[in-house]
Length: 445
Image 1 (cartoon, rainbow, N blue to C red):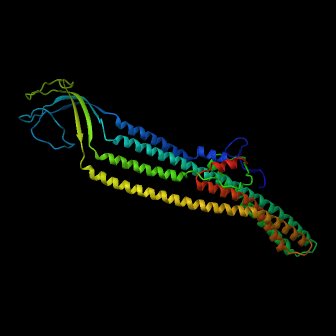
Image 2 (tube, rainbow, N blue to C red):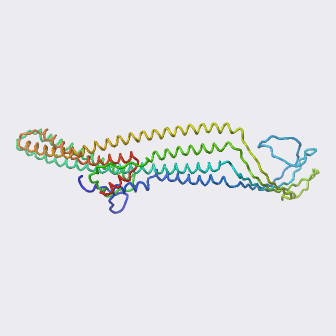
Image 3 (cartoon, helix red, strand yellow):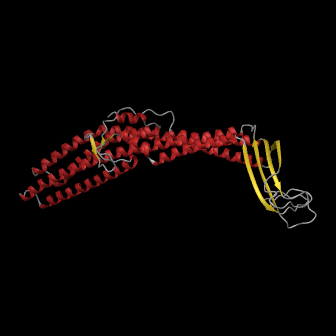
C-alpha cells in the first residue's frame, strides 16, 4: 500500500491527532446518538423493574374532607354510580333546606398476602424487557462499529484513488509537453497537441472527482466519530485467515430477547386466572352537626371529627368476566411469539447467506489483489513503450493516451485491491457477529 498516512483536515479538535481504525470505532461507540438512546432504554427498563416490585408493598390511602351540606336522607337502594353523593344517617320525615358542617378523616390499608406468582411474573417480565434493551444496545453498538470501520476504509480508498489521479495528471502534463515539442518541430500534426490537452483536462476532472470523494468520506467518518483527525493510519497487507465467527450474532441475541419478552407477558396472563385476596384494615373518624332527632347543632359543630370506627377484614375478588379477555390476550401473545420466532429464523437465514456472500467476496478480493501487481507491471511497461514509440514517431497519440489511462487505472486498482480485502474481511466479521478479531488485526498494523 502506498504511504503510511492519509491526511485529513482537522476541524473538530485542536492539535494534531492520528487516528487508527480501532480508535475510530471506539470513539463512535462512545458518542453516537443511537447508542446513547438505546442505553437510556436500558435505564428505563431498569426503572420498570423497580416499578414492578412496588406491587409487593401494601396500599395505604389517607383521606380527609370537610363539607357543608344538607342532611336529608331517605330509604332505598341506589345502584353504584359516580354522580350522586352518598349520605349516612336515618331517613328524615320531610326535606329541609338547612345545612350543617361535616368532616371525615381516615386511613385504609390493603395488602395481597399471596397472588399465585402474578407479581413475580410481572417483575420477571420487567427484567426480560431490560435484557431486551441491553441486547438492543449491543446490536446498536455493533452496527455503529461496523459502519465506522467501513467509513474508515472508505476514506483510505478515496485517498488512494486521489493519489493515483494526481499521478495521472502529472503524466498527462508530461505527455502534453512532449506532444507540443513535436508539433512545434513539425514532426507531429497539431491535432496531437489538442488531444494531449484534452487528456490533461480529463485527468484534471478525475482528480477533482477523486478529491471530492475524499472530502465526502472524511465528512462521513467525522460524523461517526465526532472528530476530524489530521491523519489516518494506513493498513498493512491483510492476513490470509478470516476472522472467527462469534457464538451468536447480536441480531440473533436481540431477537431471542424479544421472544423471551413475549413469553414473559404470557406468564403474566397465566397467573391472571386466579382470584385476588386482600387483607384490609381501616380506621376513620367522622363529625356532623346533625342530631339523630333531625335537629341541627349549629355553629362550628361538625367541623372536627368526633366519632371513630376501625375495621379489619379479608376479602376475595374474582373477576369472572375477565377470563374470556385473558384467554383472548393469551391468543394474541401466542401469535406474537410465533411471529418473533419466524423473525428469528429469517434473521438466521439472512445472516447465513450474508456470511456465504462475504466469504465469496473475500476470496475474489484476494485473487484480485494477487493479480493487481501483474497488471500494474504490464501497464507501466506499456506506458513506457508507447511513450518512447510516440517520441520516436512510431506510435500514435491515441495509443499513448490509452496506455497512460491504463496505468492510472492500474495504480488505482492495486491500491484498492488490498483495501478491498480489508473490506471483505470487515464484511465477514460483521456477518459473523464479532469485530473483535478484525479490530485486533487492524490495530496491530
